[in-house]
Image (cartoon, rainbow, N blue to C red; front, side, top):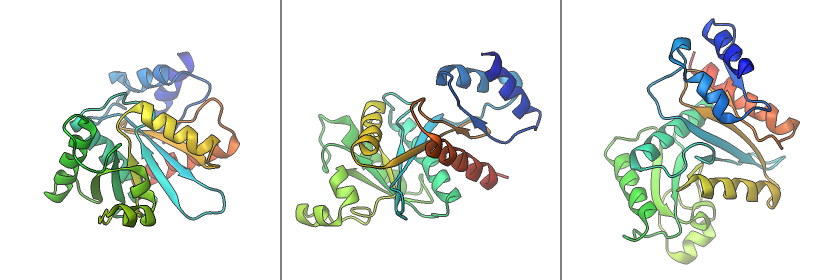
Length: 226
């Protein structure tokens, strides 16, 4: 707790532009960041955004939220998308394709995630969500595979061309991210967005490459916000 408080104190004094989470519980660090006296709290939803990529590949995916929001409601998902789009813009993609991932590609009244997906798609169409193309509900195979989308008859600009994947819950995001890492050979890095400064956030089991990439993401956000 002492190191967390000292960190946010230094940031509030202008002696740093990003925060790096080390071997400390996320909740302890976030509690320090959100203390009003340090002025780092912003009127924004706190969200976690991961970047997933394979070494020697130019393609990457942003996945959100796999670290903070347990079971986000519709408005929280809207803010989750806004933060992920901001990161995408900071990385040079000014109009990312956003897929709202669900277990079905059609709206089903017994699956709230599909209803949220349709609502978020409509928000994008009517200008409430800008700087991106939002589609959903989409299953993950339709989101990442043009061939799968063709076979299933899914005609959508995001299908097979996704940049940002929005998961329905933290459980789904955690499982997806770790499956891609430990079974699929992807590297993963992440940041927390919402405070006035970005926070590089890694798992305690992550190695040097993941930590460096997380720092790079936080620095890209900090530079973009200057």
